[in-house]
Image (cartoon, rainbow, N blue to C red; front, side, top):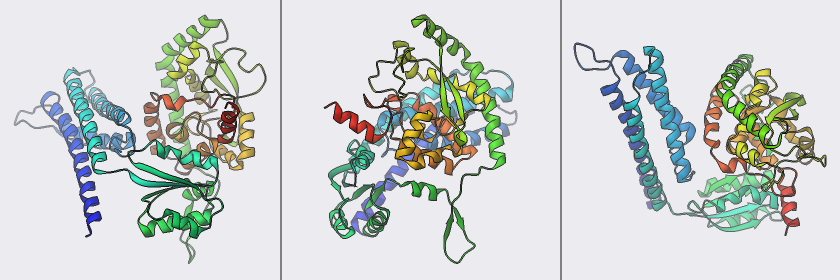
Length: 467
């Protein structure tokens, strides 16, 4: 084995050991807490009952699941603050689930003091572990020499976030390869460790991908719409050559029934549990300017069916007096002080629970667009209409992994990724991850001032006009 491979192996082994050390340390803390303070002690010896053993197995699986959903071990891909918050959510869900199961099993509440004490201790340990492991990772992994390849400015925007991750990527060059042949591009790539590619013609891009694999270069590719569609294709084994079959999405009827069942149950629970917050929010909006509490306008759901979405009003009553539909901007003076507050806490979205209960929306699905804005997007991106294969949702793939001002092309691709992999597990994971983005300021960032949509082209034009 050569030296680079040996170094890579011991680095990977070290990080794996650190991750397993954390996992079993935190799980061990829970078992210790449960064994000494909550498990039943039988008369013929000190040991856990069958119930307690089963619960420990359930918590092991739950901790593993929540850790994966919130990505607490994605040291290379997330900021320390994000990792720490992910640790908090993982531990909170795990310990909360244990207490919930125990309360249901015993039919009465037990003193949660010891559980809270071990939760706090595990949290402190996890915070320290995150800081230490993050430091170790970037101490032994230097930033890799990186090049960005693009054909249009809009494509460069999609991969320019590599600059922000300067601990991983040392972006040395960005090159517009619109007028270059494959042979010229290969010469440019040579000597780099990472390559980002966006907007490059499919045949040339495929050649770059094969070259990266052959030379051991890490390639990062912004997908085309066709790539996303093929991701959800069916691999047909009927012919003597590999065939991918694509069609309009056709979810399993059992899945649709289950999805609607949970929409009804969870929206009802949400309406009842959050009714005090909704009443207070409505009262504050009314007292501020005596205007209407709710804001309702037409949105599109499955198969372009229009419906009236319900939200708490966060803007002035005359916000669209010019008759031009527009998204909120970064420094939008139409948003009231009360509106800024309820938007920050996502309280303005709560009335959509009634839309879900009614059946206009679902909990997880592509966010509904206004017809006028959807029409603009579809003129620029015809494939944008493919989002309407399924019912619009309160949260979804684009909401979790994108932002309010994410370019519609990227949102469409994220929504298609979700449509390709729709399942109860995927819905559950996205609902859990939604809790994390509720506290992220970036997820509500408005579009550029003077723009009316989130299109990169339009926002770029608005920026040029402000210079």
